[in-house]
Length: 250
Image (cartoon, rainbow, N blue to C red; front, side, top):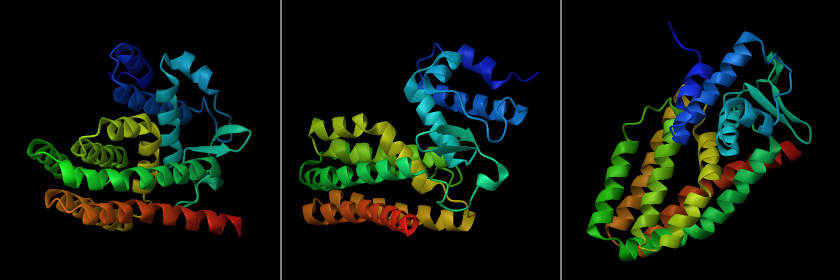
């Protein structure tokens, strides 16, 4: 007999592994939607209520809800709350991203461009042989992640940027990225969530090339090239969000 997600969640709640808890909450919420406990159009309980129900932190709940927004099972309505999507509220492409999430992702990217371009330059200047090997290992792991698993793609992407920060030999760069970790992963999942499988594969290959350019510049200790490669990598996403925001405003 298969245990449902809520039973699994209770058994895992003491493990302290936020990633596992997040995936279990996602499954539990999906189960409730499938069973009709949260009907199409129904408002989702508040964050504190969900924290009490599942016995997890707000961070876990926010990540789970963000994931279900990406899966188009939930819709955020500004100033009102989060609702279970109806059949007519599941648009294609990037249209499902609510304005608050979009604006927050733009703000996070603006900050990351300012911080990570210089971080990459310092990484090229200071990286040790050991840290370079670690960066190469992270890059190699990215290449074997299944392209249809947006959560794993996002986490692997984040680990690469953390490894670049480690190469800088400045612990504050790493600290900033870890502090922004939840926001960065939500943004990365937005970017990795592609409705069209062919478009998704093309995007993942391009992202890998961009990461490869950053790695190559750091390995060659070319500060200017590392700075340019990181800026190009992050700026593409920011421009994409700006274009989406402009389209909505028209």
